[in-house]
Length: 334
Image (cartoon, rainbow, N blue to C red; front, side, top):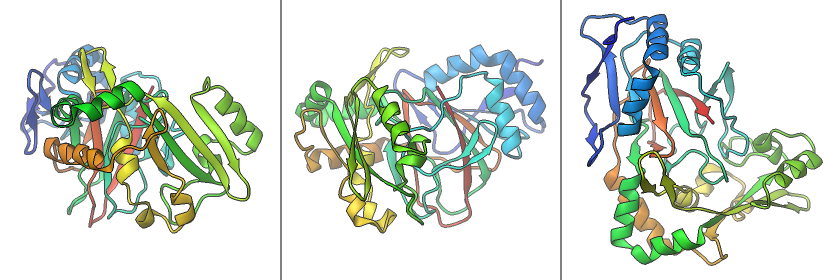
């Protein structure tokens, strides 16, 4: 197998990271060369260590221009890395199984913006990596912006250091409401049965009991389950890169427009995030974090067949509103 089957290329929207690589690092076939799906899979198996070195430097690797045509091809690419799969149990969004290890990405309405976040950062444990695949290329919007999380940490430290100190010392508690049944036309207000992959209350109670007290459950008579998660850290130490990351669901939870996303206003009222001691998080500081994220983001246009591997510890992602057809598939890594 040829070492240089793929080569580094530059695309519009990339960003050089101070002291690190380029976000995202982009690999594509040499000009005029066709790389089949099988060749890509074999190359990944051979060059996995080198690929992971680039992932360490850049936080995300975009594979572009290879013959990856459908969910089955994407599944083969994911399996080539031989990573342990992470299931979406406890995740908030609506996702559907497609094939093998492949699921749809968040099934929010196309026009909805999804704020920056580390995947499943509201839980005690989160995926280490996330794969995305562009099945239907959006032509108007629909990008998946990326964000070097250490940049956010450093900016927040500079602009509102006292707030960051509170986050580090107290952590965060997330509170979510899950109804007894899924709500039609809502991508986020799912039932506790769907979120935790259970059928009976006793099954959910048993799963919550395994959290060691980090997740608490309260049944709301006639409505569903209130889940309280935390306190969990709002800042984490990236051991591989030896730097802090702004690892939380704060902006995602605080700023999401639930009234747009769901017709159930009563359920929306249950959802919030507070400091680990129960005190409220100042809105002004959250909006500062949101502004910093917008200023630090990296954004590129999807092309059909793109596969991106994201280090979920180092890099956050979001979703821009889309006003065309768009289908992005995903796979999570433990």
